[in-house]
Image 1 (cartoon, rainbow, N blue to C red):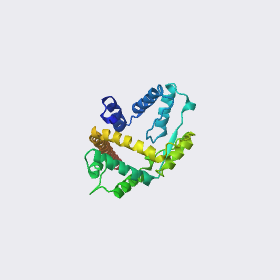
Image 2 (image 1 turned 135 degrees about the vertical axis):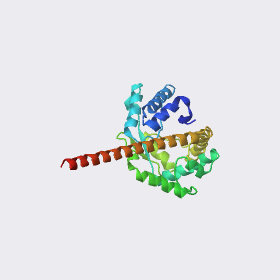
Image 3 (image 1 turned 120 degrees about the horizontal axis):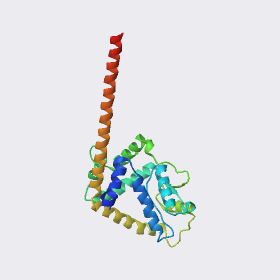
Image 4 (image 1 turned 30 degrees about the horizontal axis):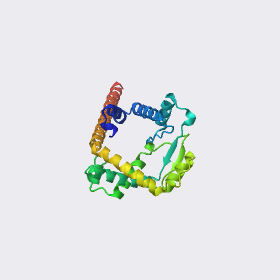
Length: 241
């Protein structure tokens, strides 16, 4: 299930999405990572985090939990924006189908557009949204090993292996890895979609939008008050003169 649907995590999700308080969520990620380390020598924590202060928070919590800093390796994946947008389109289309929705119905839960959603429209809208808010882009972590995965092929694995100093077995060719991993990924997405993720996500999106609009209205009213006060002061000054 998505964190928005798990009772003990829903409050964390609300704090992060609606209040901007991300600390509880990422503290829990660090805790779960440490739990995993009790039974495994190597643990991989994969999460899409754009700001270094959040990444550093996770690392700090992991170290506080007993991990050695020199045993922590940070890999930051990079990808061509258009390649990423195209991949997101196909994943979203698959998840929409799994939830019994069309791609257009699915996208309307978190995007505003007219007509039917197409692959090119999705890609263009995604790229335009990223260009309009460059400050929301992923920061480069000073301690991270940058790995480009734009190829979306065996070079992805080659670059990650090189970054970690690993040697992949010849008995695990790229095609066989994909054949094992893709069904797991699709099954995971299916469980998430069937659990009502889209409705929960749409609710969060609507509440955040309403919250943003409310703040904008308050700021506009405050500006109008300031203008009226300035007019009154000017009127008073003119009267005194």
